[in-house]
Image 1 (tube, rainbow, N blue to C red):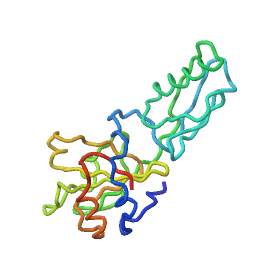
Image 2 (tube, helix red, strand yellow):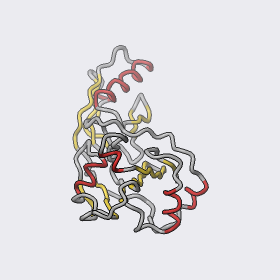
Image 3 (cartoon, rainbow, N blue to C red):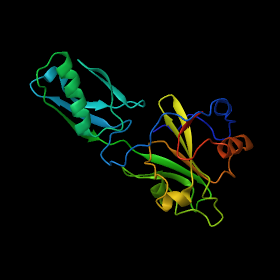
Length: 213
């Protein structure tokens, strides 16, 4: 799976120009939600032309379906997606459509954990894993780690964003523990980043909010 299309060594010029919080709520902790590159089967009862044995959700989290058009799938459970499709079909031309969604194949989910952790690297994680889980995969933070400076870099389609977390508060249950998305890059402490990135992250408007850059 391709990683984020940016380098942490590049200066965050776009970020320095735009620091308004991105309207991107943190994903819910539902382990059954769909994500990019997942493959699903769509069954519409008595409508073989609308059914499909295998459909891949694209990098933008969407797929196209006859009679419905392009549908946002990421963040939804299969049952939620089925209800969404049924509502669209009902609004168009099918009376009381019966839709079911099955997961054919889960995408390989990987996260990069860098900075002041015991074993930096790229790790595969299960559906529903969180920031706490990712740092645990890297065998925890180093003793010198600045835990109030943990950044998650994320790419969703053409949208690149970053959020800053105080890991001490996350671990204590006093700050949201975000669910991981495929391709996330976690930086524990900012010492490995360029000065431009350090300046930007230290001036982040709020914790726990993804900001476009």
